[in-house]
Length: 116
Image (cartoon, rainbow, N blue to C red; front, side, top):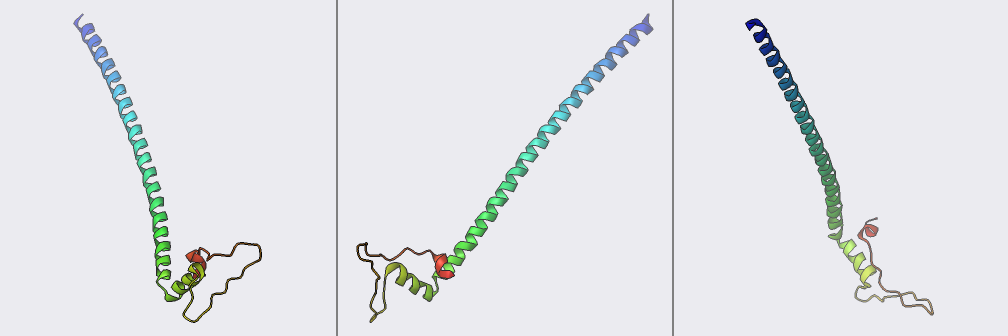
């Protein structure tokens, strides 16, 4: 009788351990999956930040090139003449006009047009 009781206790204990380890395994597997998903999300955010950084670096280079171009005296003169309608002393400003239309005004220039 005592032998049968010991076997029943062992079966109950082994069944309990199986369920416990199965539950622990499921918990660890789910924790691993959640960690993997979080890592995947952070990696996506890092990639997005790198793309934005590259875009901003390109924009910075473009703005620096535009700034350097605007420091050139020839570009400053061309801007003053074409967009502001300024003339050098002794020169006469000639503005072509078509009868019946409004007089043309100095045009707004894009710096990239001047650089070409």
